[in-house]
Image (cartoon, rainbow, N blue to C red; front, side):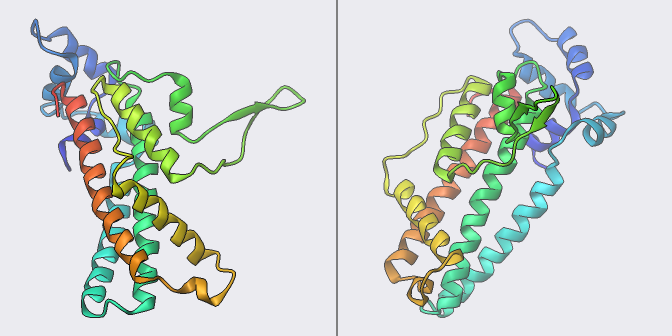
Length: 238
């Protein structure tokens, strides 16, 4: 597993306190905890399995499946760029990949809020968990139903939350062609999964090009945000 996942799996509040007690002067809390976590064997697996709702292995399996599907679709497009079923699959799989990244990153951040150096409020954690509660007439709490959040709003929230959580400046690029292409590609995906006429099932050349642009933009976003999280956990700068 990568450093960012291994740290999230290994460190515990008790271990962090032990590492904090031995922290050299001038060294950040995150850097101390991160370095110490690599050498700590014992009962981290128990904490990981019982206390953390987010599962790194599940994320890896999910992203692996979607990545392999996307690679297979790209190979098919290279052989026959005009094949409509392959074009539709490319748009649908890519959008699923973006949504999987958004959800999994939110769950990861929510679990990391347990670390004392991660700056998140309880309200922000609830939003990351995609949970909201209301009080019933009998005084009991009730979990509200899922509320749809557009992907563009989700990504903005994730970017701002990552920056705040680790006190590392980050600005999401929403002015370039990639952001616009992503928005339009999701419109195409929505049209494909909720068609009203047979013409809506066709992905045009321009729509395919925009999907390519969106996919390239997303890969950069993915890398930059996870690099930020990794740096925040290590107490370094990306």
